[in-house]
Length: 412
Image (tube, rainbow, N blue to C red; front, side, top):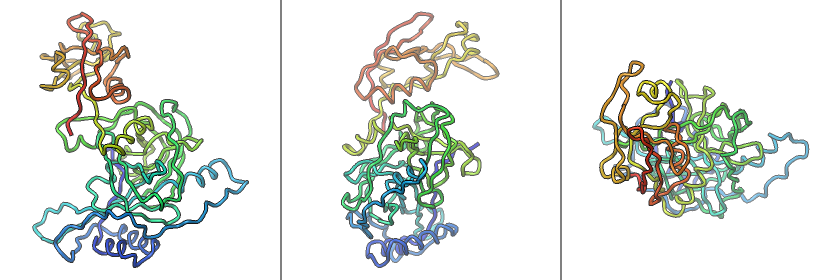
């Protein structure tokens, strides 16, 4: 099975889109028809009027601004109908344009248009979405359910949590911010809904349940960095999520955002009943820093680890109930290196594979039990920050030790 990041992309003539958007020669509906027609075509090369790259639009002027008051909700609506009418105006369609990488020697530039989803975060014009939706974008436009379209600028992005924040002219926003719920209260079996723009179909709502908790997915930076990082505490859902849903909200039946839809597990790159959502409590921690500083600094230990399971523990001569994570490698100059953590230097064949045998085994951090790798990265992500000193409980040569480690920041 292949895990797919779920933003769709197509190509079309950027010059046409930019000129239409900036001149205001057409309305949003006309522009939407042009984009939708282009999205149905295969990727094609287009000839630019010049060889220079398009310039990012920074002036926050609206193509169309709707000022009509929200329509009162009918009294005979079901719960889901009322929830949709209340939430959908705050969910946006995001379209981006960026220059594509070409392998031929032609000077003719090729551009891609991608799209995803997002939602209104506050009353200051901030929109939350996924980092992978806007990564590399030269132009970003946000369209609301009333067809209001506004140019947006990226004010903060974090590949390691796959979150980003856009800013639009707040006077053009006729939608209320969504409320972030407490993802720690989410339970398997809980009913949830997703609202977004799969395949460019704006305002699509799907429903399902939370099918698992505590998953991990690779961070966006892992594809471009020598270090491999993962996003912890991921919510798994069977609510239909498809390309274009990226960045949209997963909501409980009270209308609270419990996560940001980010990825699917599928061999066909369309919904197979396994969707992954970044939990709202990570959003609460990362997004304010993106708004204030443009970046988020993730704390790190600087180690590679291996989870101790029952067969591994028994093969290493440890009690069958022993759990924890063994230190396999220590990054030179890292906090773990400075604190003197011992990496493994030997391996042993267990269940047909080579496993480390003599590294330090971390069994707790600040008194919180660590049974597996996911426990360690979850604690670091949720409860620590750069410069903080944590206490690791370590099993070394059969002896339990306390090791103090002062965390530094991951390299960008």
